[in-house]
Each structure stands twice: as structure tokens, then as C-alpha cells.
Length: 244
Image 1 (spheres, rainbow, N blue to C red):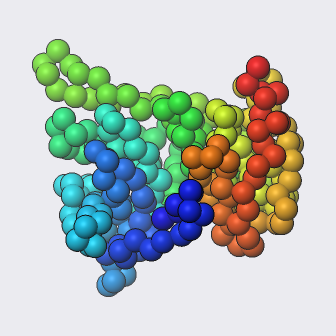
Image 2: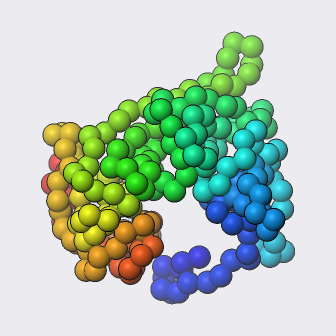
């Protein structure tokens, strides 16, 4: 866990599984799916209890066991995508019914090892070994019979230039693709006005398989999976071009 004011990292209690997806539901940090110590893929969901320093089973298990899935958290639902090779279905947990709902994927398939980010309740995701980016919007509607059903809407964005293993990120409402295997220092921004990607800068050092998170200071923390981690603070000036 990173503490921005103190500029310090601290350890959380170890999770009961590895290769899990990480999400939040009702203010609780949860691990979704993963591999057990016996190397078995699971569909269980565990909640972190900081005061007791352990994880406990929190929700009914998913119908499909998944490892390294993408997890999207909303007040109305918890959405899990991928986690298996050529996965053609995603699962959505609705708190009002305490049930998982299985929904077909609009993209032909999405596996594990994805990079994701959230902008205005829309989820952007891409597999690390692909340059295709998908946008997903999930909502929950109440039927006339009083039941709740998830509604999904998919859209494909323009493919990036030959560019893989990048990290998706968001700063000031703008979608970023940071680093990657082919252009490991490049930072690209998506312009909705022109429906194109534009180069807005470079990382100080090459990196791929990274991840990003927005800090309370308004900076984007890019944590590299292969080379380094840097705070990309030059984006604010460049983003003003896309906000207007």
C-alpha cells in the first residue's frame, strides 16, 4: 500500500492465493479468483480484514475459476473479466441479490494478463500481448418484477501503433498508454475528438508490463513490471490540449 503524504510503501497481510484480481466492494478490499497453494485455480472471493490481519471468504464463489482476471468495482456491482485462456464470458456480482450473473463477452475472447483503467464509470482494458483496446460500460437495472439485471455496452477503440505490453492509465480524464515492448519509453494519449492516439512524451527509462495509479497529488504513478517505476508529472500540460 502506498501512502502519498508520507511517500512510503507498507505491506498488507499476504493473500491466501496468488495471481488474483484486486477490487473493492462496500469499502472492502477483495481478492478475486487466483491460484491456491496447491496450484489450483479458484473462483473464490476473499476480503481483507486489516484489524485481524487476514483474509476471509467474502462472497459466493464465481461459477468459473479464474486466475489474474480484470476486476472493475462500482457501487452497484463487481465485474470480473478474463482470467482464463480464450475466456468468452464475464461475471457480474450484484449486491442487491448477492448473486453472480454470467454475461457473454462482446470481444471474441479475453484471457488473463490484462491492463485496465477506469474513466467516468467506463472500463478500458487490453491484453498485454495485443494492441487492441476495448471499452466496457456496466449498469444494473431493476425489472418490473423487482429483480436486478446487469446491462453491458462494449466499444472498440482504434488500435495502437505496433505497441504491446503497455500500461493503460488515466489522468485528468484522458486515456493513456504508457511504455510497452516496442516503444518502451513512449506515452500515448487518446483524443476522442480525432479518434486517434498521439505521442505526448516519454518515460525517463524504458519499461513494459507496468501498471498505473492516480495519486491524491494529481500525478500518475507508473510502476514498471520490467525495468523501473517513475512518477510521470509532465502529463498535466499535455492533457490540457485534450480537455478543451
